Length: 115
Image (cartoon, helix red, strand yellow):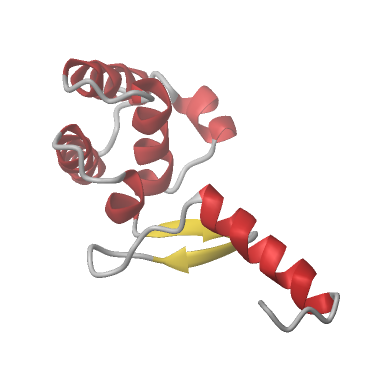
């Protein structure tokens, strides 16, 4: 299976499982699992994906199709511009949490002791 076919297959599997951002998630699973970027992808999209990477990608797609959060599958997430390792034992930081932290920092800098 080529890189292009793998992404298309991953997208289809995720769509059938009603994953909202199936196309994006299929790409991110390939990018992070195979440690490639878009430049590599477009230069090699018709090349066969090595068997070990294909198996890893298919397993990641299967997990995502089971609605396991993408961050748990890839093992990291971004929060406040920093990357954090995550797994099923920790909560995934959300955008609204980042907003709350920013507001708390503003109030703290202003000398407000009710933070």
